[in-house]
Image (tube, rainbow, N blue to C red; front, side):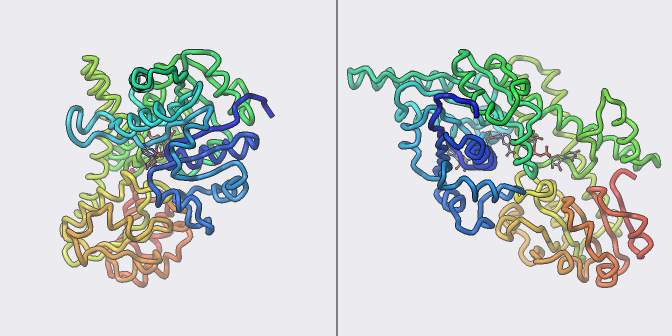
Length: 466
Ligand code: NAD
Ligand code: UDX
């Protein structure tokens, strides 16, 4: 084990990043006490659930890590102030969504949770504290955090007329995990990125990761490169998805097949074969908001052409979703009135219960506006979550949430695959076909089913990109 004098870590924000990341740090650093704190007491209660099926985040393998570490050196609580006071290092892992109103609305990140975290740290930290930006942030946010940390201290010092001897270092350590594979990503990352201003803080943060990650995978940069690299990594990944999705439509028009094209181009090692799965567009809490943030930054610095270039990645993503809903309507004789459609999959990707920006939301809303009756099934997303995401009051009886895929499909005119959960591949499609109204359609927006087998059963099949 790598030795360091770090004994106590606090993480502000017990979400999809804070929870799994700190669990792995606790697992790999048994000598460090890790306190994960949140202002949302329901979330903390769920992290402390006896029944590990009730954890607020579903991630394969996370329950095992929690079982090993919780109560040993990993604690979830709402004791924000006390945990800050005890910490040598504080990770800020709070949400940074797109601003909804005011200056920069629709593009800039809303930093109110970052600011309130910094203010609380300024007030309750003791001695020297390393403050780590784990949240994804606009470049230069470290400057703002520093100003908040020190301005509050000056004020308190003046007020109390005594030397509080608080000092801070700011380090950027963005997180690259993907949901659904978070545990493996955290255990075996391609790289860990640490940006900072002083070597001592960079070394201390590195020493945590060195407990399980080889030094050559720990990249160090200046603060601004680290902050910007996170936004750019997400922009490049999302760009690949918009690129392949744009080509999926051309495949449909020409008789080419998107999977064959992806395979052919991906075998060029300069392009690479990952992240070339065409689908209903990227979802998740990160890609859209981080690109919009990048677009905002570019416009702020007067780089309008660069901003337009990246904004197009988001526009193609929305277009892909609209395109899929109109293909469904057209194939079902131009009207969805009095038709039941089964929506299989509501999470933004398989192996997560997260629905933020899920393509299922926009596509379902388009179909509901056409008058469809939608029957949803997702193996991990709770009924209340689906209803909340859809603004269900508007659609009343036209939304039904089912306990099985078979229930959703029974009597339906079409089944629409929007998330590639493994269990959808193993369904008894022959049974489903018999239970549906004729003609029976399958719209496979994830290209995950065997379309020639389904056609043989009698289905009309539309597969994206072919
Ligand atoms: P999340 O919404 O799941 O969790 C954030 C948590 O922070 C919430 O539980 C909220 O109650 C808490 N919080 C907010 N303000 C607080 C405060 N002042 N004190 C205590 N708790 C507070 O968000 P997330 O998905 O975990 O994302 C967190 C950050 O990490 C974001 O910046 C995101 O862009 C970035 N990120 C997310 C992912 C991902 O896959 N979700 C991956 C990489 C990076
Ligand atoms: C992403 C980044 O991958 C991760 O590095 C970052 O830390 C957070 O944002 P995440 O959003 O959790 O992770 O999942 P990811 O696997 O990137 O998928 C994002 C979306 O793109 C999903 O809706 C997924 O279905 C879609 N996707 C992904 C495709 O449509 N095709 C692909 O080839 C890959």
